[in-house]
Figure (cartoon, helix red, strand yellow):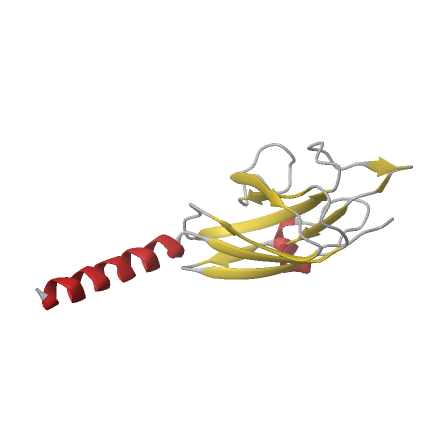
Length: 140
Protein backbone atom coordinates (compact mmCIF):
# COMPACT_ATOMS: atom_id res chain seq x y z
CA UNK A 1 0.00 0.00 0.00
CA UNK A 2 2.87 2.40 0.71
CA UNK A 3 4.05 1.92 -2.90
CA UNK A 4 0.63 3.01 -4.18
CA UNK A 5 0.97 6.30 -2.28
CA UNK A 6 4.44 6.90 -3.74
CA UNK A 7 3.27 6.07 -7.27
CA UNK A 8 0.25 8.36 -6.90
CA UNK A 9 2.50 11.18 -5.65
CA UNK A 10 4.89 10.80 -8.61
CA UNK A 11 1.97 10.69 -11.06
CA UNK A 12 0.46 13.90 -9.66
CA UNK A 13 3.87 15.58 -9.66
CA UNK A 14 4.50 14.70 -13.32
CA UNK A 15 0.97 15.78 -14.32
CA UNK A 16 1.54 19.14 -12.65
CA UNK A 17 4.86 19.60 -14.48
CA UNK A 18 3.22 18.70 -17.79
CA UNK A 19 0.43 21.25 -17.22
CA UNK A 20 2.98 24.03 -16.61
CA UNK A 21 4.84 23.24 -19.83
CA UNK A 22 2.07 24.83 -21.94
CA UNK A 23 2.04 28.00 -19.85
CA UNK A 24 3.88 31.30 -19.77
CA UNK A 25 4.37 32.99 -16.42
CA UNK A 26 4.24 36.78 -16.82
CA UNK A 27 5.63 39.24 -14.29
CA UNK A 28 4.36 42.73 -15.24
CA UNK A 29 6.10 45.39 -13.17
CA UNK A 30 6.14 49.19 -12.78
CA UNK A 31 2.33 49.24 -12.46
CA UNK A 32 1.37 52.63 -11.01
CA UNK A 33 -1.92 51.66 -9.36
CA UNK A 34 -4.22 48.77 -8.55
CA UNK A 35 -7.02 50.37 -10.58
CA UNK A 36 -8.59 48.33 -13.39
CA UNK A 37 -7.08 45.26 -14.99
CA UNK A 38 -3.97 44.08 -16.80
CA UNK A 39 -4.98 42.93 -20.29
CA UNK A 40 -2.69 40.70 -22.34
CA UNK A 41 -2.64 39.56 -25.95
CA UNK A 42 -0.42 36.82 -27.38
CA UNK A 43 0.44 37.09 -31.08
CA UNK A 44 2.06 34.71 -33.58
CA UNK A 45 4.38 35.83 -36.41
CA UNK A 46 1.44 35.76 -38.82
CA UNK A 47 -0.67 38.02 -36.62
CA UNK A 48 2.16 40.38 -35.66
CA UNK A 49 0.64 43.18 -33.54
CA UNK A 50 -2.39 43.69 -35.77
CA UNK A 51 -4.93 44.49 -33.07
CA UNK A 52 -7.91 42.21 -32.62
CA UNK A 53 -6.54 39.11 -34.42
CA UNK A 54 -4.77 37.38 -31.50
CA UNK A 55 -3.69 33.85 -30.60
CA UNK A 56 -4.74 34.24 -26.95
CA UNK A 57 -5.99 37.06 -24.75
CA UNK A 58 -7.27 37.69 -21.27
CA UNK A 59 -6.99 39.88 -18.22
CA UNK A 60 -6.24 39.80 -14.51
CA UNK A 61 -6.85 42.30 -11.72
CA UNK A 62 -4.14 44.95 -11.55
CA UNK A 63 -1.93 45.19 -8.47
CA UNK A 64 0.21 48.25 -7.82
CA UNK A 65 3.90 47.53 -8.36
CA UNK A 66 3.95 44.01 -9.81
CA UNK A 67 1.22 41.73 -11.13
CA UNK A 68 2.14 38.10 -11.81
CA UNK A 69 -0.10 35.79 -13.82
CA UNK A 70 -0.12 32.62 -15.90
CA UNK A 71 -1.14 32.43 -19.56
CA UNK A 72 -2.30 28.85 -20.19
CA UNK A 73 -2.56 26.61 -23.26
CA UNK A 74 0.35 28.12 -25.21
CA UNK A 75 2.16 25.41 -27.19
CA UNK A 76 5.83 25.71 -28.10
CA UNK A 77 6.48 28.23 -30.87
CA UNK A 78 7.27 31.86 -31.64
CA UNK A 79 5.17 34.58 -30.01
CA UNK A 80 5.00 38.23 -29.02
CA UNK A 81 3.04 39.60 -26.07
CA UNK A 82 1.42 43.00 -25.61
CA UNK A 83 0.14 44.18 -22.23
CA UNK A 84 -2.19 47.07 -21.36
CA UNK A 85 -2.87 48.47 -17.89
CA UNK A 86 -6.54 49.21 -18.55
CA UNK A 87 -7.01 51.48 -15.53
CA UNK A 88 -10.69 52.24 -16.21
CA UNK A 89 -11.45 48.68 -17.41
CA UNK A 90 -13.18 49.85 -20.59
CA UNK A 91 -11.38 47.36 -22.86
CA UNK A 92 -9.50 50.03 -24.85
CA UNK A 93 -6.29 52.03 -24.73
CA UNK A 94 -7.31 55.59 -23.88
CA UNK A 95 -5.53 58.59 -25.40
CA UNK A 96 -5.15 62.31 -24.78
CA UNK A 97 -4.08 64.29 -27.85
CA UNK A 98 -2.83 61.05 -29.41
CA UNK A 99 -0.69 60.10 -26.39
CA UNK A 100 -1.61 56.92 -24.46
CA UNK A 101 -3.08 57.71 -21.03
CA UNK A 102 -2.73 54.11 -19.82
CA UNK A 103 0.34 51.95 -19.35
CA UNK A 104 1.54 49.35 -21.83
CA UNK A 105 4.43 46.97 -22.43
CA UNK A 106 5.73 44.35 -24.83
CA UNK A 107 7.75 41.18 -24.54
CA UNK A 108 11.53 41.70 -24.80
CA UNK A 109 10.88 45.21 -23.46
CA UNK A 110 10.49 46.21 -27.13
CA UNK A 111 10.43 49.98 -27.52
CA UNK A 112 7.53 51.95 -28.99
CA UNK A 113 7.99 54.76 -31.51
CA UNK A 114 4.59 56.28 -32.43
CA UNK A 115 3.32 52.74 -33.17
CA UNK A 116 3.59 49.22 -31.75
CA UNK A 117 7.09 47.72 -32.08
CA UNK A 118 8.04 45.47 -34.95
CA UNK A 119 7.08 41.89 -34.17
CA UNK A 120 10.69 40.72 -34.53
CA UNK A 121 11.74 43.10 -31.73
CA UNK A 122 9.18 41.67 -29.30
CA UNK A 123 9.17 38.03 -30.41
CA UNK A 124 10.52 35.12 -28.41
CA UNK A 125 10.67 31.35 -28.78
CA UNK A 126 8.74 29.31 -26.24
CA UNK A 127 10.12 25.81 -25.75
CA UNK A 128 8.74 24.38 -22.52
CA UNK A 129 7.91 26.42 -19.46
CA UNK A 130 8.80 30.10 -19.64
CA UNK A 131 8.78 33.18 -17.43
CA UNK A 132 8.82 36.69 -18.91
CA UNK A 133 9.22 40.04 -17.16
CA UNK A 134 7.51 42.95 -18.91
CA UNK A 135 7.91 46.57 -17.83
CA UNK A 136 4.76 48.69 -18.02
CA UNK A 137 5.45 52.19 -19.37
CA UNK A 138 3.32 55.29 -18.95
CA UNK A 139 3.57 58.33 -21.20
CA UNK A 140 1.21 60.56 -19.18
